[in-house]
Image (cartoon, rainbow, N blue to C red; front, side):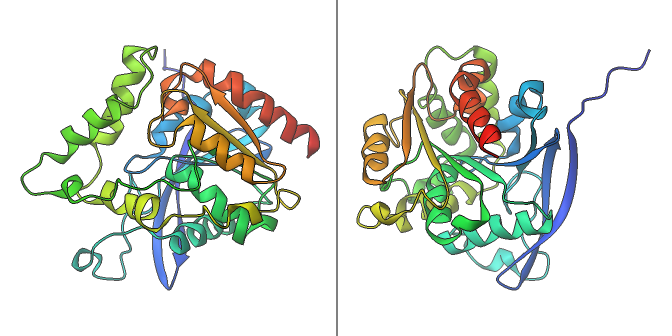
Length: 284
């Protein structure tokens, strides 16, 4: 007998940003409200594997988890000599790509959810493109996350993939199952040289909204913030303080969760994110 085929499908779509076109790979499953899922720095869309396969989510949402250019199965731009320049992610490129990706798929005001750098970019989407989104769900986000754009992420004397996986291990909650821990580390060990460091340019060198985050208008787009209690990159205290500056933003600490809630413990993650998705669905 043939084995059952997963309902999750993978496709490519061309997205043009700043005059360059990228062949972007994405996974999707379900029908309903579009839910865009952004992975963490140096990783790829398999971090959302469990969300894509959860019928309680895909019954109401079209879950779309993409690989940012240079990550996973999404290439650098084919029309330029990308290998001659250093990859450094900026807020302008990041937000323009997300908006361009949604336009390429003709999505009607999707919900956007991202973790770490994907959580931080929610603040920029709320500032610059609030009318484009139905809601923003910022995981592991704070208004200032300095200190991680450092040379040894991409140093010739350092085995970067093993280093990255070991750092990731320290950001995962101790209650996480061995399988989910190892998979989360494995995804990071697959990053191309320099990609994690380049992502951290946005996260730690460019990003600083301490003086401006209070101007975000949640009347234009709802903002939900959630952070794992074991996250030391953007701690629960930092995330809660950020949310307190934004009128109308909500905040929750996720217990027994670290920096990668979507890949560490799906049932526990859903106990926090499920009610938010239900609320957005009912409001829609």
